[in-house]
Image (cartoon, rainbow over all chains, first blue to last red; front, side, top):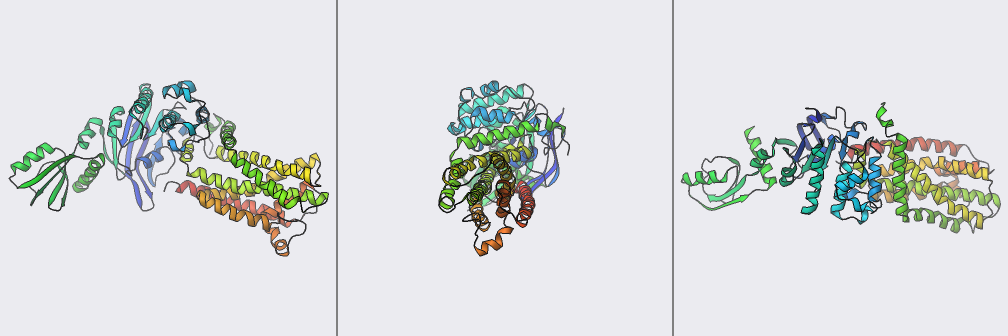
Length: 293
Length: 255
């Protein structure tokens, strides 16, 4: 299958901070890829490299067979502005016309606006739109130039359920027609609803690149804590911390762990099991990886 | 770098699209235009109308004030505008569009020239109504052409400030620079009778060279060569500095 975007061993530094650390990734034609990771993981940096806003410190970035720094190459992509950045004084229709003017092929304006539920807002100034309407306009702009590959950075953050579903429908329709999408989110639900393939990024590295199901299993880890003097050998432990006489474990299968813990005969008390946040799960994943390397 | 693709949507069409958007924004937020028009008109009424008599002196003073008006919108308007735009998330989005920096840069200059021409109108009207200034239509056209040319170094100063500094600093710095450049170039007060100190410094200020070029176009007042040469030097130096600030900004924006 044709590769539309590719990074090869890409590293990006901001001064002392290493935002991306040897990331290699292929986005193939027709894929809908979710890029998942906590804030500060390097998602935005990766997108910025792919759309030509940044150059890598080392490594190579390819976009549609060329360089993202070349404006002609960027005719094949669509990008979403942050909704806070849309020029307040301009009307919805004017912004769509302005963005469309950059592309040789354009999506019909009425059709584009209708697809994102904006058809009644053509004459409205951006300053008078609600947050959700601005967000939808921002996402619509990514599709204005009939792109082959669309980058959507946190497209539905802060939207209500209904607006979120409407946006998802628009994205699905584009994908169904053969369009390729790279979507970032820190919500697993969103990636689950749209993507087949998920790339998990943490601390600038690719932690997992797999199906949604496989990543869900990784993310389904639990935090188990209990008070005990010693810790017996237990299965599936990703991370261990000891604090005030209690052990805090991040584990892949809490049921199996508790059975083993009871079976080991080690006295313990105050057992608690809690779901972890996505961020904790990612950190555990990073930590376990470091421990095994 | 040859880029045959850039001709497809057409570079001219892109410049037009960017200019249209910038002008529309200006028109919808007219207070900025009011400020850049009001300021020189008031200065004209306060400094030139009560103090200047005679056709030549009035024409010279009006030409100076017209330059004063465009200088202020070039340095302050452009400097603050660029700095403020850079801080909006819309700016990185525009850089992902298939355009390159040129259409936006060209649109900024065109938009600025439109605003500059508008801000000149009240000054000229005041001169016509309340002073002895006279001018032929040909000289008026020459004057407008000279004005547009001489604003280039001030636009470059504005772009330099705008690309170098965050917007709050750009507001302060452009004002701090604007008034000394205007005063030391002898734009305020009687241009024919400068205080001794200013008389020494003025030839090296870009404002002096600019105003002399405009006098050359609009009046028969004798002009010196040094200030006009210095204007060329300022243009080259500020062009290099503005280009440097622009490149530096591209590299640093999201650090």
